[in-house]
Image 1 (tube, rainbow, N blue to C red):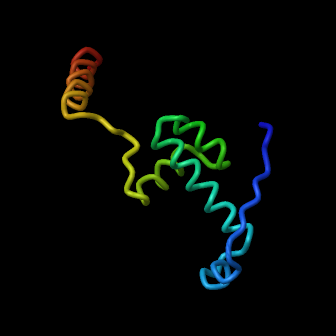
Image 2: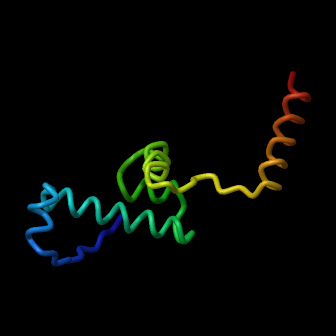
Length: 93
């Protein structure tokens, strides 16, 4: 995957006070950028995990920690999913 390098200037005391190294702060900024793209449905969860270099499961955990639902079903959609699983179970027992 081809990458671009972005330069972001932040007050040095932000890094000092937060205890972040420049590398850690850059990764946190990338993570927030990717989460924002995901929230606005510009990338998939799988693509987000790939960009961050982590497993999809770990991206789902990051979303959960941020209070963002990975599965965003309406009540109707959730009921339909449960019906499908129930029907599948009956047919495959």
